[in-house]
Image (tube, rainbow, N blue to C red):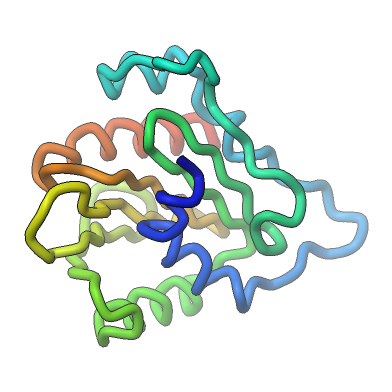
Length: 169
């Protein structure tokens, strides 16, 4: 499932990670994205079943850019990037809005993190990518999935995002 998600909402993470600021030598590494939500959190919020009994799958070192970790579970991807500045976040959002990635719609979101936006693939058909991207302090949190309905995915993704942010404090 990791490759499908990376091709979707993960594109944003990959574009943004290519210019990531390296973690300073001697600085403690941030927790991995998989530490913020338990398997039971994912199952309860999504209402999905872990058919393969694999549980959340953590990215391995080298799979993501410096300062970025990813956790995939139930066809949902949670990506956390450290050292995110407001300028970097704004530049990435602007690139998406201007069509740098060719296929995304963007809508600002208020009431979560320092700033946030929804992004989704507006092309018709099933299994479209939808995600929420949030900056909170110096971190970017991206949560996305392949979905039949953008509007049906948003409440679930928002709940996952709120829980993730609450555990980052």
